[in-house]
Image 1: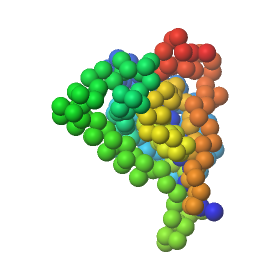
Image 2: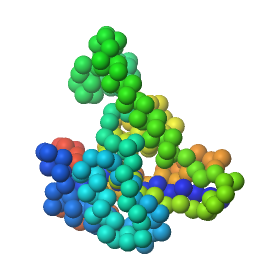
Image 3: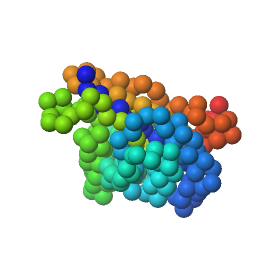
Image 4: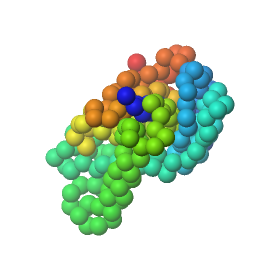
Amino acid sequence: MTTRHLYLARHGAADAFGNLTDIGRRQAGLLGERLAGLPVDTVWHSPLPRAAASAHELARHLPNAPVAEAAELIDHVPYVPQAAETPPSWAGFFDGYDDAEAAAGQKLAEAAAGQKLAEALVTRFANSPDPTATGTRPETHEVLVTHAYQIAWLVRHALDAPPSRWLGLNSANAALTVIDYRPGLPPTLVVFNDLSHLPADLRWTGFPDAMRP
């Protein structure tokens, strides 16, 4: 059966300007070492510098895999829930996105743009290979270096959860999430937010201090 393996990773730790830090480079390199034994076809990355730098750092351990930018992976809010869908603890996150203000125009346009990007992300990556297509290989392996929201959106999609359930699915820097896609079957979430390739002092960056185990 043809299978598309997606290896999703949040970029390494970055500074306040969005540039990869020394810690981020170490995290990305260790992720690359973990993936080195896989027949990776392509390393895709978000257009943002922290994701591009992380992709090139981990790709040093994948010498046969090309590195390419994918616009769909850029950081964006994939779905703005209506007030009734928003948990009270998240209400402040969407300040300015209440129903009345969204209807005024600008916020609605921003939300629509984010949802369009989210749909493009799913269309491009969240599907299985066509087994009848000429040249289709039994398995493909792709690494996506992106951002926490995009990983959350793809996990939500794989689980067929309501759109608002991307909220709260955070990923640590350089954490690994794996989703498999096969024709005629629901996606398989193999692993989520796995940090076993990182030493203890490099884990859980990207999470608020109060949420780190």
